[in-house]
Length: 501
Image (cartoon, rainbow, N blue to C red; front, top):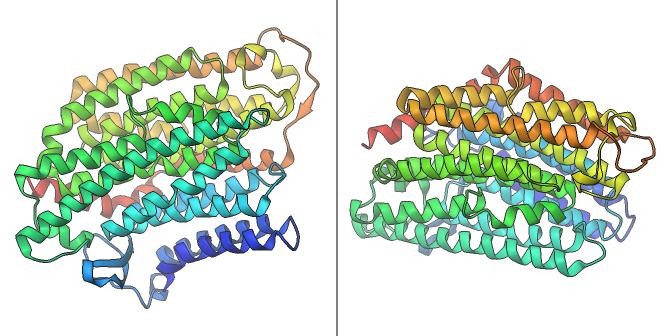
């Protein structure tokens, strides 16, 4: 029953963290950390020690292991979870960054620690569930369950301590966007299921069964568009990006790690897993529009990032730019670009999370996120400037880091089919170097706007940054390890969608 432990461990770790706060305020963080550590070990055991999975099924070509229990049998709903190479890579990322998020919040959360770690673990549980759910109702369940804990994280622990109403308004804004995404998702799932029922007289939400029969072409485009809108709102892609900047600006930076690192990556995962598989004809027809939205998001995110004076908003806009590249990889590329997408998702999550960690350290000492009030910090701060420069260069795709490998594979894959689009996308990447290096110049070089005390990077954040640096270097020099894990899954997704044309 190892697969079930992937959601059982983080869920009950959150519950125990909540109730353990009554005994000692430091216990919740230890329970959460141990819970995510056990979750990561479970992922390793499932993938690298296959013989131990005695209760899982190995009957479908695209999945390594599956676990199926009846849930709501009258409606054809099952507790159906499964892992393949694609999902296992995302589970590694979620568990790894979950541990980082807990460590970052170790000494930062001073109130309601039990409830805080409950919400963190619920977000991680929902994210893990999205990556392993192979029943569409179960997928929707995990997709929606994340909303409530994320609402509490921003409304109760937002950085706007003087005016909590601002944090509540931002949390409401996020909830409205996310709930809209969820409602569109639910309507699309129901249309897909009812279409299958109409043609086969079988009511089921089973992912594998729904794949067996193509969707009626007269409604395929409508259902595909519903899934697409639901995913790009969560991604987010312009013009559905309005919630992201405010959310990141006011969120505790440990919570931002979960958003950037894992939650946003559920959208490209869904586009590849669902849109490419269920709706190949409609996806092919819609590809020019999706590619245009991706290119526009790349340029828009880069241009607006350059004009930002708030460091967190700048990082958020850079994420929008990178999400545009991922969207192009899904709709404009081939199998090579899909592999590049995997590396890019991992590398972008790590580098962006690292920048949020370092920005949190700067805010901790300077009590401001305003870049215009900084300057000349290189002589007043130890380690943070060097780390920031590395992660900024990684974010713009410097060779030797995973971002470079991801962007290269994506652009190379796109070039084989759409050379002009690849060239334009490459030009937009140049803009990322402008806003990244401009951020470094304004914060760490030049003349200080005011005198700052000399301070050192917290020892915990120091070692976290070192681990993240090695992770990016590993992806930059040995990406084949990750590509080997995900190869069969990506190969199956690509060939299955092509076979349906």
